[in-house]
Figure 1 (cartoon, rainbow, N blue to C red):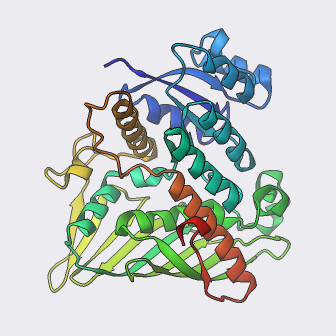
Figure 2 (tube, one colour):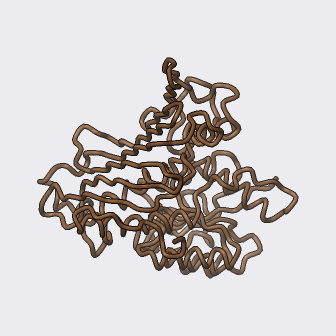
Length: 385
């Protein structure tokens, strides 16, 4: 099959997230990188795009220029990735959906619940895919955890424990560093800092693996470094739609923790544990039996795991390959929409606008509960209540 055309907004030179997206999109040969508006500085963006191999007429100086330039082309991009600062996600995603493009948006999808609901409605109205990059759900063994829970390997899920804690913002003398300070500034970050940055990854993964949605929550939030207006540590208790009890800790002041994304799922007949820093192993404890270590790349794990594992057992697959699984999902979904004869095996796997909306509702619920000393609040967006 011919490659699908892919374009990127943001992710310019020096970006942390840009290379991961470009590696992920190109890994399986499904997408060709043909267009980009990579920097808010037009000339720098054009120059970097051409150095990455874009034709001069498709190395755009702004996202608005890219929208107009691609809209009229027969070989227009099939998918646009939005990897710009958080506050711009809504405007850009909305414009490209309205323009008839499929979109993959970095998280958070929007800055408000109302914006999130509008994106969901536009995606439904236009029939275009709006995916959200909860890229860690692309890991092979996270997909296998989901499959094990769904087929009843651990019985009904009783408790899920999620963590996303690091210590990279723990130095109080660095609190005025512009690269750090904006994250705790409500004018730039919104109503939440650490939970909106990292906690929503952990909460989404809990929903992804258990197949349940968060309905209500109680949050204890703190600014451990007092000059910060927004939280740098949060403990969130939550209840899920299937009756599961959830616990979530997220922190940016946990010295000694590096990335710290971990998920534990405890059911009636077994427990599972996975950590993003050791993504090749999934720990499975059946009730009354010995601990089992499931290795990524072992044969015949589950269709969900087997289709997302590329290299032989014992070799590491990291974040760009997890991103690549999201892109592979989207390629299959886009091709299925182009040709109804094609199957879409990833129809329920890639995170979509509804997930982005639920995350934003949870962000506001955590902020509300934290200010009310842990009062239980409804975590669902209004359109899903």
